Image 1 (tube, rainbow, N blue to C red):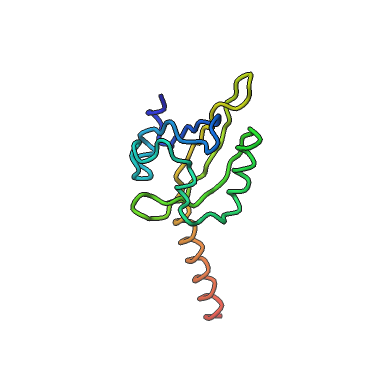
Image 2: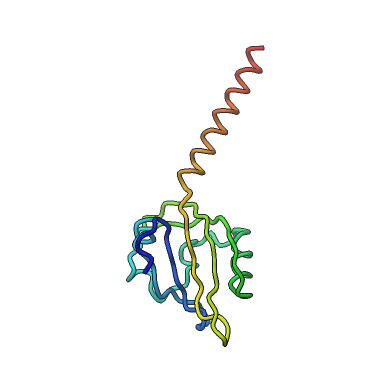
Amino acid sequence: MCSATSNGIIIADARLAHHPVIYVNPAFEQITGYSTNDVIGQNCRFLQRTDNQQPALNELRLSIQSGTSCKVVLRNYRKDGTEGICETTIISLQDEQGQIATVSINHDITENKRAKVALQRQLHRTLLLEQITQ
């Protein structure tokens, strides 16, 4: 189905109250360390562990409830406990009766964020050094 992409794909059943996961692709398994068997039947909230006060989660929840699409950046946690940053796009699939599935496309941007932070720190140090030497 979605095995030829480097983005993690999750499909959840929107017909059931807690939107259980019904499919993940191999890229999701590689990015998160969770196997398909670890994930099937769970709500995707487990990926945030106790980090459930992220402002982007409210936008994501509203999108799922209303059946609209959205794109957010979330801190998720891999099976080994390490933090990962994902740009997550949510798409709701609907039939004549309403929502039937929610598709989550997760692009791992962890390394990009780390590189940006390192570059900002280096720039800050350089600016401080220039101020000191003037």
